[in-house]
Length: 242
Image (cartoon, rainbow, N blue to C red; front, side, top):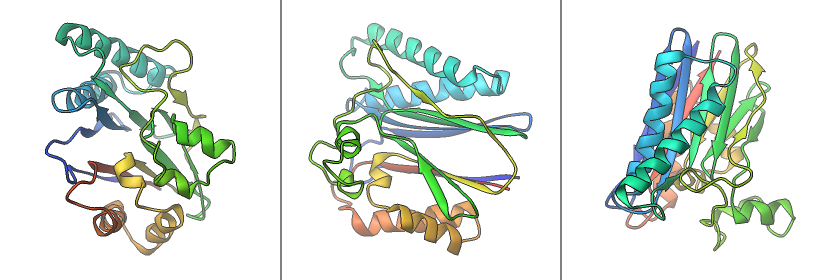
């Protein structure tokens, strides 16, 4: 069984550049979360454009071996074409995280600093996607801690996103996992994960009974800790797989 819940909130901003969507094909599920960059009429267009392209592809074809690669590449091509059409080549960009779950497998891909957390081993261990950002490099080098990434002054400097020409590395693909034991996933924009520590994420997962309760309990921490007069948009998709 796959059970999920989705939320997005503009935070303290006038417009919401985040975009979240789910899609279904047969027994397969696809979840997409994006955080647009570029301001009004740019970031929100970029995020909604690429997310809907991926969702439409999944609804039409379902999963296949190269689905994630095809989805990212096609969405990138169409976003660059849209930039050219609208004359917004320097502004219309977005992060993206995509999770695909079928009746036998699970896999994901991402670009930017929106994250996917995969929680396993009876909700005691987790892994997360690595941000494509300056602060992730500083953390990997041991110059700052994982927790310091949340508040570092350069945390918004991204190295890879949708809507920028890819001359080298682009999106990252996960391994393909087999379904079997219980798994949980949380897809989050930076406006969400900055305010929820990993141990809290695990604790709240274990103290709630549904993806909706888990998501709402984490969102309560964001609302408590962030300055709602100025904080960034924040969005999350929580998925439980039994």
